[in-house]
Length: 192
Ligand code: CUA
Image (cartoon, rainbow, N blue to C red):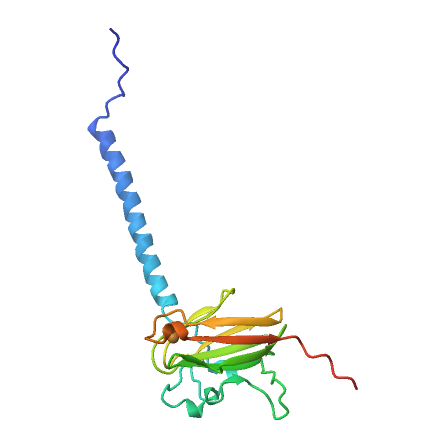
């Protein structure tokens, strides 16, 4: 009867070498995990904050506002920033500005009208607790914290309705916390 061929036996020197290799792999993985967790904590904990209000938001300093005193900020009048004639105001960055306030299970304004095809900088903050701000069907999804201003610039290329929902549990009215953007086709150029 023939024996099945046996695998060569490893002496203890070879075993120790393999052990050291696997120990090295484990150490590298631990270091990568540590660095990854630390960097995501540092970079991803808070919504992206703009600098000195991006140069166009008075009373917004380093992306912070006093949530108890929004009356002194542009958040006092939520919505698209327009001039006396009702035309959207272009800021120094060449975008339009819109202010949105989340609190008490609502977003203000209830409906935000925006022109299609133009970059709009959204400034969003919360008054009471942490809320979410997600524009459905897009990758816009930020966390809102009282006192912090999340600033992001988006361009809606197509006209139509966009839904905005709160996706962080904020209390009993969380599931009703929804608003709409009405993206309107660009106005035809005025004839001279
Ligand atoms: Cu606001 Cu959930």
